[in-house]
Image (cartoon, rainbow, N blue to C red; front, side):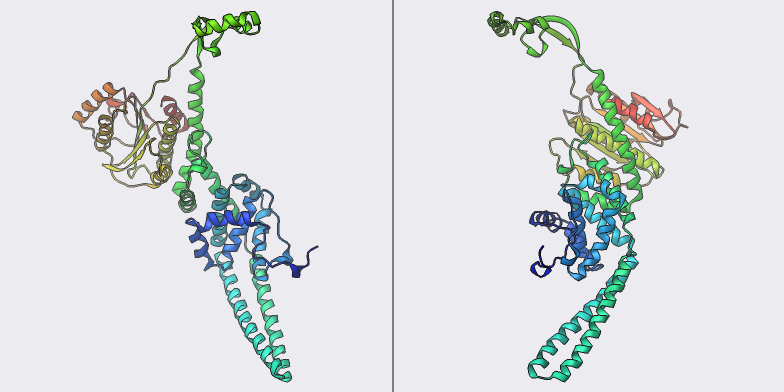
Length: 491
């Protein structure tokens, strides 16, 4: 067994190697996460080392605690936080997102460390004050130690003995401060912070996962975008609600799209001649087993004279982009805003999955913001989705501006044929007759489908401004899974 004197004392409580350290440095010192470490070190001096311990505990396949005897005294305080985190019921759940995933481990570690600090502010203030006293005692001890060496060199034994007594007192005071600091550390709770980190990683999975409708994957989302998402999620309740609903909408949209594919299965219609080996009838397959018939098979293959099944089924016709006109007026607040945006985001993800461009037009009395998602240039898609989710304004409702803008896209772009135009609003408003007629002509010419969801059952279908331009208009009290599911099935 290695003697403690033969091993350099470490600042880290989780065993790690150079590979682990390189991954941590890559994630934290070569990205915006560096600000997280540097900024919080002012609040808690051992914050960077605590974050690295948490990172290693989440990243490593089998994390192990370092022997306490090999830890530098000042950094043993982090051991208390790491042990509580690893003993939490949420820790295994968190590791499901992070194990051997350097980016996931970095985001989770940054979120967890920051949450521990934020949720125990008063206690960490006490820890910092104790640390100041400890550092002062250490400074005095270092000075006294040098004085002692000088006195001993000069043969001043009596003064040296007196100084030794002072140093012993100083050591006792340092130990007392360390004990008090540890007592405060024992009051720090990590359970709530663990739950926060779990919620963030689950929410990121809902937003960025490569499964289901997310045509991208975590690997295609930058660490900066994931960090931005985490900060918004933790601090913004409306955003948090939106992501919860988005997860449900994505699963619903995925199921509806899967059902569409299932119902489009090809059927055998006839037997004809050709050379498609996948469609050979059984008797032709048997000829392959007969050496004497094999040459004849080859000849008939070359001449397209093999008997094959003729299949029929729904031919896939290329569809145009999805344009969503989303009402962000004052009345679309709370759950309505969150649900409507979740549907709009899910539509963007359907478009990505189907390799279709998509546009989201946010409007109230006029067009407020436009988000474009072009399949030819996927750069910054996720960042735009985050900005879309955050955006909110107030005002009245008018359909003229957003319809004009949508019409511009249909007229200017040749590939905007067989597109889908979706309206989500809770109000009624003016729609210019000339603009309406212009759009209806364009709609017929380009094969545009128009769907409108009105989140207010009190509206009269016939009188609503969007009725004349919509293939389907539904009025609901709240936008539920049923209405969203019908929309996803139609797209």
